[in-house]
Length: 542
Figure 1: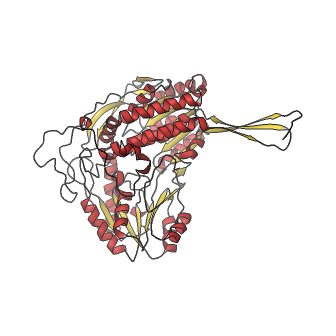
Figure 2 (figure 1 turned 30 degrees about the vertical axis):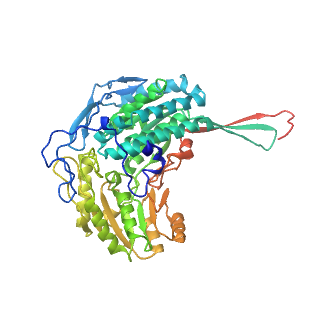
């Protein structure tokens, strides 16, 4: 329980957190294997455990959730969701398309126009969200096991950090339900003016595969708190946990039709949702390229409002006054956390020339010690990448880095012979015009760049089409204050990284997105503003 209470400060700690104590009854059972197969290895020898641990959880929900019922896709189609440790099939999941999206939108529209959810008191909605948070806590280990199995992230990370953050977020938004209110504003004349904040209506939401449960909470929490109804499309790579938690939300008392979950693919289900004429708002987290398409589809249909949380190429700036050992550990965490599959990963590590060589050598040593293997194994820091497509994309970028003249300092190859594991990889002598310094790789590849002074690094850090986040490591308050104002990004972490408290807004500048997730700002995404004006006859005051 201590780890659950500390949720707000972690994804979060500046240095990697100690794992939560795991429930022995819910730990995965190891399959029989040879004497050497279960031993954790550093990536430089044998990274991936060849004989994976069998998860002790059943996959019970593989159908679409529409109007409170689990149903097959209208086409009858299914698609496989894969275990990234092996590439083997976990389950076959219903493949929704435009017809299923239409059914889900119709259910959400009826629930909004005729159902009880928008008409409940805010307190009643709050109680449902609080019961939901309690159910998430109750099923913490099952959810974490399913998330690790479908995604490949370390079980200790999922169980000790991410699932507790989901329940924390739900309690946060439960607290907001009865604090959303309007205003009475003065007018230049005898008029009574009210400003109302109303639910926007039917909301479409598309979530990514890198943090499936957390992104579910970031999207669903504020939308429900404001009284909206939802059609959510999960990522085709990780459809399982969204269906599980949606069932728990109905157990908590959510009325039918308020939340509908459709698994499927972007060009079919995702495009149908973004272009649907009866969807009032669309929210998307994913790549910048797909975000552009979402915005275009929204504009070409009914000009629905759009929020986008997109890609990044975040600078992590280490000044010459830094404690190098601490800076190495923090920069390592900023990049390699979640297999490097973070939109805000500190993927451009700028290091002052006075400490550059020392930093590179110590970063190499830290990467060589990183434990890569079966994410269900205790002590593993890095699991596999999400799938073969991402695996091959990362390896292509590594080859590009080598071909462009960057120095391959560590890693650079596949880890093991099975699954989608990649060695923690470091490039030094990276230049700004290299592809690896410009594109979002979304994998365990750290690029280390050298700089001379503050003005230079500000200019270079801002010379990017992205503007999601940045990290600053310095002991000088004046330097920190200069950088926090000069960097054109949505979040600046100073002497820490990946602090994701429920109340802290998150989003980007430039091509990293539109709007903000979490905090009070996220509520604005799901509310309409209405002015109501009526005359006053013989008012006592104005």
